[in-house]
Amino acid sequence: MSVLQACGGGGSADTTPDAATLKLAASAFEYGYPLTETMRVCNGFARVNALSFKSTLASPADTAVVRPNNDTLYASACVWLGAGTVAVSMPPALGRYMSMQVLDAWTDNVAVKGPAQIPAGGANFILRLAGSGSALTSAPGTTVIDVDTPYAYVLFRTLVNGPADVAQADTLQRAITLTPASPSQPVRAASTSSSAGLQFFLRLSQGLAQNPPPDAQASLVASFAAAGLNPTLTPSVGGLTVAQQSAWDSAYSQGLALLDAGVLARGTRRGGWNFPPANLGVFGTDYAYRAQIARSGLFALPASEAIYLSTAQTLTGDTLDGRTPRVLRLPPGWPPVEAGGFWSLTVYSPTGFLVDNPIARYSLSDRTPGVSIAADGSLSIYLQCTDPGGLNTANWLPTPCGAYNLSLRLYRPLATVSDPAFTVPGVQ
Image (cartoon, rainbow, N blue to C red; front, side):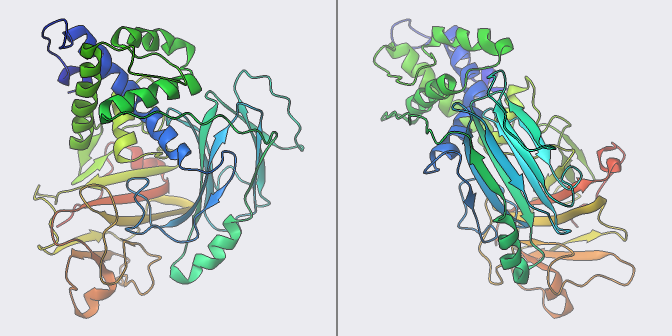
């Protein structure tokens, strides 16, 4: 089912939207939801083109982005290319995983620069608005990255090898620099409405004005005008009919319900795990899936850099519940990643956030201090809300005493992971 299918129907012409208006509003929601999420995050920054560093690993207190990893420190910036280019300098990684991810305002990955693309001595980049003709002043060897939208989101990840390594990793990430060619700041757009649905579409109107769609999608965006949606920095509900306002509210509430239910998700289930499709993070015109990921895994990396496996069930289909002890046994030879890659298993609440637990352990991997790996190289991870006791405590990944779900991350995965025949043991 898509958002479009959910919003069929009709009624009287004066107060209730007809089926065509509902369909257009639903299409606009599905198309525009990722854009509003990017701009929501951008509006949380005091300034554009300025790095924000997080000096601690993600914890249950972090709720700005769903399903955060607990393996890396994050540095990020909302980049505005409307006044000129932005230069980025990455320091030598010193054998540690570091990467830079550049996403456009629609949440498509424009570029990912990780261990395979960043030389041992570091690297320099220039971010430029595609087609802008912005003048370039850069050192030899600088890579130019063209972005199709004036606003972009840049995310840097620096691997942490256990709690004792956080300070050193933070020192390294703070050597990253981001320098705009112009100090100019964009005018902040503001809008208010008593209705969440109306507020969403007002912000979408602003986002579309700030980030015009690609030429190939301009006619689609123009069609939304029949439902009262027009790109503008100063939107208002004043010119809307009652029926159009009703369509906005219906499209928002029904569309959000579909995203929260995960019915627009893609991928295949193998060995008890959900494997994402190949277009994760590079969505093209798959607007439904793009919206789903913006809701459940905002700013996801593409499969070439990381593969995210997920499950809320055991191998036999039972719902994961922390009151029932479970175990995940990873085989000898794990993990299936390239040199410089890494892996982790993370527990999330049903809403996609980390969960408080008595030992403050939110993920587990071979980097976890004290973890016990068997003589044959296999690793057993114990999933439950109470301490399993004895030797098993070392490999305990605490869960809530209720429903939970898991993410198994593989950074720099081997090519075999994308093979349909590849499987991962399921939770027992």
